[in-house]
Image (spheres, rainbow, N blue to C red):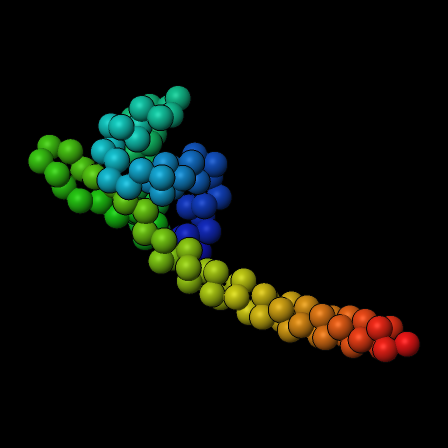
Length: 109
């Protein structure tokens, strides 16, 4: 999981993931053309993303097609967010029930 956080720490890598989310199957050259850095720099970022499991690729003739793998992000969500949201949903449910009970009392008067 540390490698996922490390990969997400760089703005360019997050932008790469955004591109792959909106256009799955982009070739490496197409992706590199979206950035004002060298193709080698983009390849280095892709290596970090691939090592973290966030990007997968498939050979397509002479080019390589890139895809976002959202599973590591889902695992982070389940570990860090899902548990917290359950707590707050419980609190919101209690507030709603209390507000409805107060409104019911007010209407009964």
